[in-house]
Image 1 (spheres, rainbow, N blue to C red):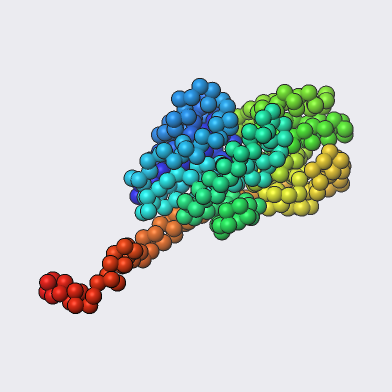
Image 2: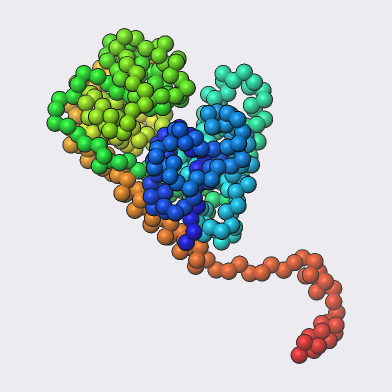
Length: 394
């Protein structure tokens, strides 16, 4: 079986990069087709893969400003020739599912979310754009294309119930739910008492709402450590008071060490799933999370953390104060995280591929259609002419 993998882009990969890594470990010979890739931002393991970027790779600045080229990504993916493959695995939060495949090729899409730039968060993204009037027709065209591209997918896999509901709403398609892989075995709790700081682990982008965590820490005068980097870094640093510390990007081992030592992870964004929340629990630490989206599936209320119901500084402050009254069991947090172990992800994905490939193999042949013009000619011919023609073949 010849397998190819597609990814929206390979630059500053976040949680989606972990899904991509585990899919590639299942099919290590599979080339990865993507719009652009930036070797400087990828792990040595990823840089050793067979990565095949699109024509966008040759455009100046595309590696650093890949989001600006979203309107060209449908064209980029449609230019890939994937006719030689039996299976195409698409990891998608934008346009990767829109590749064109042969009738005998199975397209399984692991969907992190329908593209948030043009669907759920469209108005948030365009609110501060200088050329908002130009963005509207482009976004409309992308929505039309995205809806059509969803029909090219043979089987959708959603990374959470939240994303499954979006797939149903935007694409009118059902989906199987397989949670993303979390390297639970890499993260171990420690037996010491937690240190007196709260933690944020995230890309620093606006929709993650790290500003709520910073302003809550400022108001309550609580120590907060922020791990991660991104375009909102400068703005967030301006908001930060003296109790807030930014560490930038750290290694996986350094992040795991901070998980194990923190009092709790703050998780204020509306996330599709949220790997950081599971990683913190794997380290035995609770999570204070906004009570919508993926956090409702990963954080057990009053058992492995708390949910706050309004995405505001006041609500987060109330939750942080309430947190002081709870005593969370690290062993319960750890057991909850083990539900999302990477080995379970690989097992479920392998079963899905085998089941779907079997379905393609056993699908009955489609009857050869009758060409309308030929049918009309047959109807017009007299019976004796038909008899003569048939006798000529005897």
